[in-house]
Length: 200
Image (tube, rainbow, N blue to C red):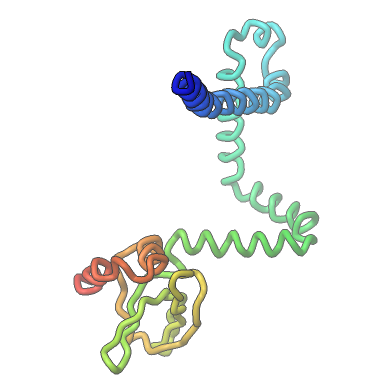
């Protein structure tokens, strides 16, 4: 009897833990659907006659299309010079007055530069004793020097900043994520990354 009770209990619990994520996903999708419809409804009511909205059979899909269309049109408008000027003026008069916004915007700009490869370009610093260290190239100077950061393991987004001769640096044909992954694993995988240095 005990074995049957244990079997029923473990099977029921196992089924519950399979069912729970599905229920949560359904609830989340339902909430997202309501949010999309709620956002799109004012725009749709402004653009379409009421009879068109009443005839819609799939409101979520219709709302999604409306939001995508509006986003596309706003994106087109934002590419124009007058829209950029208006956006800068509006920002200067409102959000730019908030210190926290300026900090977040600066951080966002830096992250964008990192994504584009303008900052934190992976490289290897060669020392006079023949040793090598992973480095992030921050900027190159006109006098032949460069600003670099020497990341620490296993926290590769912190480290020392140094200014060194550009000749001591060898670029790596690797992404920032590749170097970060090696450093966060205490250097495991460094040999593979250094092959790209030899090919550069």
